[in-house]
Length: 75
Image 1 (cartoon, rainbow, N blue to C red):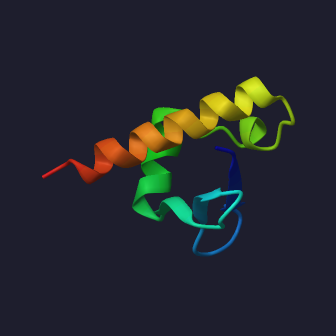
Image 2: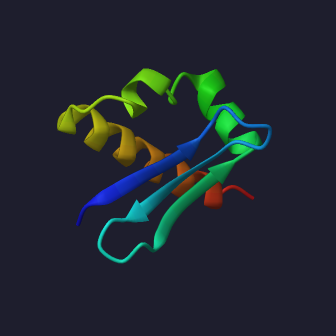
């Protein structure tokens, strides 16, 4: 399965989504407070998102999935 990172981080209401490249289905959607938390933790690096290195992007997508699932499990 391949993914597409759709991120608009330099706008008044930033968001980041991970889409299934084949179907266009949104797999992960983060905005506002969640993005700020990722930045504060150092888990969201703008340079890593703009790289063309597959291994770096794969790791970034993996971390975003894990963060999204962990956030969903919070009480």
